[in-house]
Amino acid sequence: MGNSFGHTFSISTFGESHGGGVGVVIDGLPARLAIDLDHIQEQLDRRRPGQSRLTTQRDEKDLVEVLSGVEDGASTGAPLAMLVRNADARSGAYDHLRELYRPSHADFTYDAKYGNRSIAGGGRSSARETIGRVAAGAIAMQLLDALAKRRDTPAPRIVSWVDQVHEVTASVDPALVTIADVERDPTRCPDHDAAAAMTIKIEQARRDGDSLGGAVRTVVRHMPVGLGEPVFDRLEADLAKAMLSLPATKGFEIGSGFGAITMTGLTHNDAFVPGDDGMPRTATNHSGGVQGGISNGEDLVFRTAFKPTATISSQQDTVTVDNEATTLAAKGRHDPCVLPRAVPMVDAMAALVLADHTLRQLRNDVL
Image (cartoon, rainbow, N blue to C red; front, side):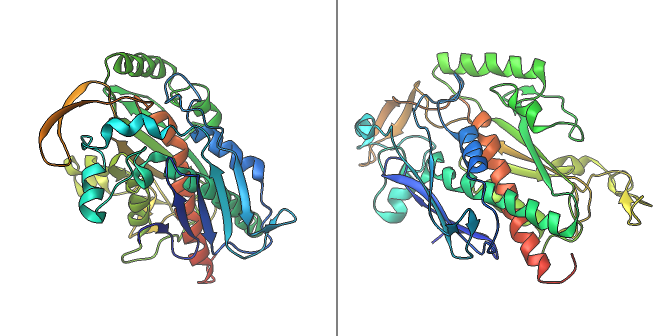
């Protein structure tokens, strides 16, 4: 019930933040795909806690175990299951929350819906659930590479970075930025000056017992033409669902996004020009690489907004489970800003959408 994502290439995540572990089951993965476990672990290392002073200091190595679906280094065509065991859960640190609801968390809504909630770490609502998504996203990236190689075309290349933290905005050229640029700084912002300012802001927020939000921008280069299934499975619609399913997300825009409101049709339309490869190109990319819900071959460009981390150590008003007014100053380990660790999560969800739509398109015998 809501724990699965995807149509042809689908995933189901499982586990809780303070349970035995978290993981994912992938269904629809073709057989005989070479599985690079090191690449999966690299992506999980980008997501894991404790990787810098800007993130939560929960000490988890997040080592991946493959439980099924792989034999002799290749996929078998059966469901592929992966597990990451929890090693540094401290459930007792949440005992003071048993009789109250944390502001802007899932405590009240889960209690109202299910009649119970996971006191320790938020259970399924915790960002730790995204481990399964990142592991599956790494498989999706490998699948995209293999399918592109079979067609003798460049594989889509996904690059996400921290574009904004609070009021600090980066200046980055989406056509030139690389993953190496993104990984040079713990903020995952490739603009050196903006990264330095973001670091100061994040560290000050931690000292103040507060938190910050921001935005991740993504570009996907080497996009094939034709991905997207109108009407309800438009490419941007599935991307929006993918991104807004991530914890702490509050907004999604593609191409010109909300900026299109202030433009006219004449200034917003992407004029077609002859392409060097015999296919039309567009002179601009206000559409963000998608027209009519289908990719047009231009770079896919979108932006995902994340709210400030809900867990803060400053005192806040709240209520008890009996609806009585009280206050809370949260304890424990948390990110003062989720943006640096959100980057690999966005990458993974983008890869899952593209892998799913690529396999769907292959059924049409067009690629």
